[in-house]
Amino acid sequence: MSETLDLVLVILAVAASVAYLAWRKLRLARRAPRDWTSGHAEACDSCPIVEIQKARQRLQLSK
Image (tube, rainbow, N blue to C red; front, side, top):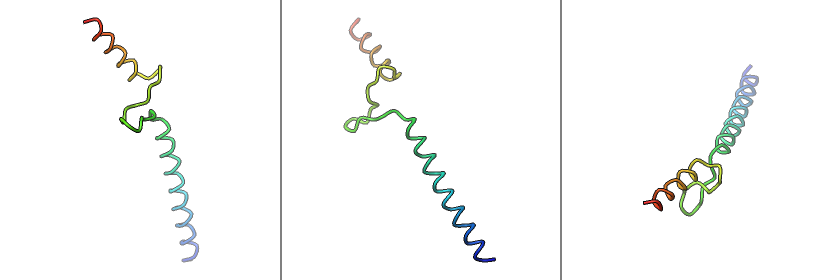
C-alpha cells in the first residue's frame, strides 16, 4: 500500500509541476516583449503604449 501511495504522490507532483510550467509559459507569452536596456515595452505599431506616446508627441509639437 505504501508503494502505491508513493507512486501516486510522485505522479501528482510531476503533473503539478508540468501544469505550472505550462501555465507560466502561457502567461509570459501574453506579455509585451521588453527592451533589455530601458525595461519599456518594445515598439510595435498596434501597441496602445506606442499610440499613447505618439499622441503625447503630437500634443507637445502642437504647443
